[in-house]
Amino acid sequence: MAKYRFKNQSGTVFVVKMTASEYHERVKDGKLRHSGETLRAIDGGPLAGVVSTNPSNYPMACESLAVDRENIAERVKEDARLGVGGTEYTRDGRPIMRDKSHYRAYRQAYRVHFRNSYYG
Image 1: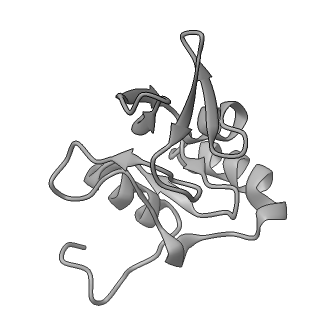
Image 2: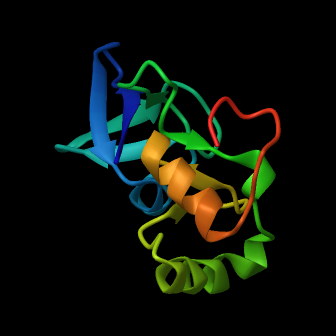
């Protein structure tokens, strides 16, 4: 679960913890209704305002492991079958890697090896 940053009209910054799926459901046109207030996302994009709590820049959306947006539902089922269920996807089909171990398990499940990766 990622932390997203939003700002209210008076400039106060709010950090809201939610999954990428929740983000896409709750945030419309960069605005979120939270605690009776309308908040605006600080940054734009599918992973708007993600605040990484890990120095390794996780969570991260992995461009090289992306699928076509029409195939996301199929990929989620395949993830569960291969033992990497719970992987979330951005609207454009990029899987969101929660941490280093999730990233490694996902690549091993799909038999993907990055030759320039710093670990196997």
